[in-house]
Length: 465
Ligand code: FAD
Image: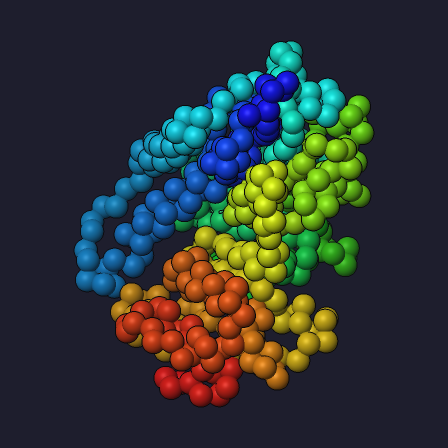
């Protein structure tokens, strides 16, 4: 459609931000190419992130269940064994089918995959492995990569990032996890279930910063009950490799106690940084913000005309579904539409056992904002389905505006909460009150009845408590 340039749109990076932007733009009639330097499409998420981690989380959960829970259900399995190589090949086949699915979608939508590394030469001009491509618009969707701490050098064997943690060929005897965020607790859980002793060192006095404090405090107790060792409010002083093991010196934040842990593997999960290097951004004059992310306005435009950015490389939570929402939105903007991403309603999920999920405000943020709220809580221990499953840990907590009963935040910990959170997000997207949820008939016996009961509890009307 656009004579004079090769493409209407070139997207750099084929992660959930980039590939979704490419597909939506193609659906809207744009001539689209997507540059990806990996040998497969799908970005961090499909290759070394969400998908492989969930494959291992699921498989390791089944392994642990066979060991620890089946007998309680009257299912006797003798001699449960781990075939780690098989577990990895399950994970790999999940990755393979997902990444080839994106390749299929590219073909279906007539999107050209330009294989190689992109460097932006000027607005509308990109070099892909030295070859010039021109485009009316460019979307930067280069994602993020793991960071480390000063003095800690990752070798992906003994000192590993999440990528190494998805590929360990043997179960470590002792894994020390530096950083108790989502990735740390998820991958720590995988190896703990498979038999490793796991110690999590976290600088803050709680796990999962950003999640509701009551949830993360309860969750920490559950992990300890499972056998994980938590060193909260501790900082890492030094990490040294020695004779096949790693010595990790930590001290409490107050600084009056120091100890040295010995591990065979150290997982560094202290955060991720945006990928902006080597893209030519400086030469073109694309501005970064104070945290090194590409700076954008509400329309995902950078300060350079015709260059946009989405996903992990810009501000906001580093989550696949956030990147996807932005991918759709930027494509629609380029096609002349006026889409909207509601950043207040991006769910956050931790795929541990029990699962944790949230959407909207936490009690801490409501207090900080001076908003009066009522709390409706319902424990899974009072839910028939959860009892039938033998999974009674955790609760549903709904925070509703004190005056209007409008739902402001929902916090879940328990079985299948990753799936249950969608109901809360949908209710909030429609501006529901807790009473709207409570007046909706929920099937019995389901875990989601706890959502209804918690909604009733915001007005002290719960039936089963
Ligand atoms: P990315 O997925 O990082 O993709 C960027 C792509 O750009 C990469 O493939 C890269 O090769 C390519 N690229 C970069 N520079 C260039 C260049 N110059 N030329 C060509 N190509 C380039 N999020 C969730 O929502 N749920 C989860 O359960 C979850 N689990 C995770 C587990 C782990 C272990 C990790 C590491 C992350 C997890 N995430 C999860 C986060 C999620 O993976 C990211 O938020 C998401 O992938 C971001 O998408 P993106 O498109 O912005 O970037």
